[in-house]
Length: 467
Ligand code: 4AD
Ligand code: MG
Image (cartoon, rainbow, N blue to C red; front, side, top):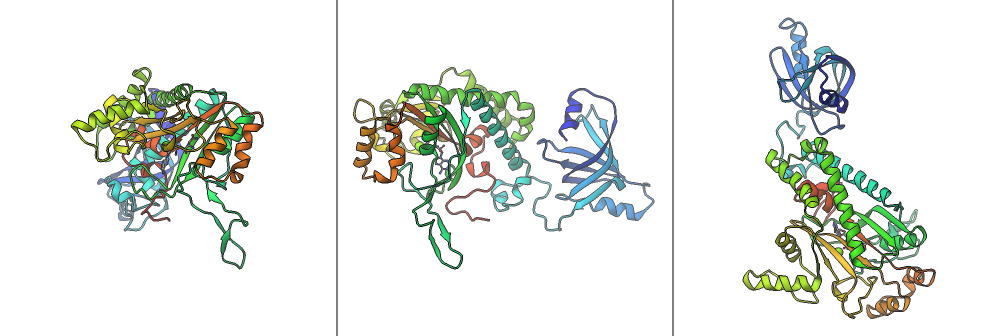
């Protein structure tokens, strides 16, 4: 359908015969002599107006039945139609076809649950195999694809090699204990350890990326990650996709934050450039053009603001404590404890901007982060964004072999298990760092969606079922 819209955009006014149009019916309005059918084929978020003319008006009752058979949800093929400009209407063209040119190739039962009207998200979420056909959720998936392409282009521009780290791993990169164990089933036997070795689905591909960055300089991946999160929230999934990058010869957090900021701004610019295609996709259920404007303004604000603010964790705690006096949070902000979601959201809302919080206390973060000279904080950052909270987590990595082993001992970690990783520090090590961005959080946030479960086709989270 895209080409039909492009033709209208190019200002063409000549009718043209088009053949073999295929799509799904979104709605049908039956008139006496014709039916107005909204069709979609997935190439654009727009629906296309098809006007089906009744053959031999008023004469044959069988032809009347044929038009009546057209229903929401069916897939149809139109052998031949005429592309016709309609400059006075909202949609600048329509396709016109005779009823015998329209063939139903996939019918629906009378109980087909998606009807013409828009459905609530809570209803759609109960329809895991049909929900993507809704205008909004289909659009969100198309938007996600657009974001992935933009990210791919960004990394291409910055000489980062895309790599494929493993999903099956032996360890817990983040040390949070939120692991899914992998088991195998021998042919006749019971479930057993994966080939006799403790194995888990990866929580983050970072440690393997560090191996690859030591060979390739700069690399990145977009991989599924798994966390046995008990949190049943609108920003946690048990299976999500993480964009991770690892950059050699980066030795300070500031450079990492600049790279992350450049990346997000690049994607925002791509969204602005492509808003013609993306805009109609943005109209969320029950909302209007005003909401669309808000989303586009958010993209523009990301670029207009100049450099985003950067605060150290200690500065953030001071700010939060000041606020806590007048308007207490549920959790008191205390130096040494990780920021709560409410703190993160408040900071970003207060500064009305994405904000980098750097140099968290060592005890709040994972074992691999580079220790600062103050002996109590690490060279890391979280990027917090309004409404969502944490979007990215990253750090400079501890590249001193002895310091890394000491930290692992302090955390009672088994050195043997991670020897493959720590040995990197003895074999041509270089300063390096990287970060991870939760793709569903990013997509949902850019799109103005409130629940990251809608930004992944099949969501897996505590309390949800699996189809
Ligand atoms: O902050 P996290 O845990 O960082 C890491 O895993 C690092 N190893 C990344 C790195 O430096 N290469 O996770 C990174 C991001 C979070 O900021 C969040 O956006 C997302 O991953 N994330 C989740 N998204 C959805 N559901 C979950 N359960 C998530 N856990 C983390
Ligand atoms: Mg984090």
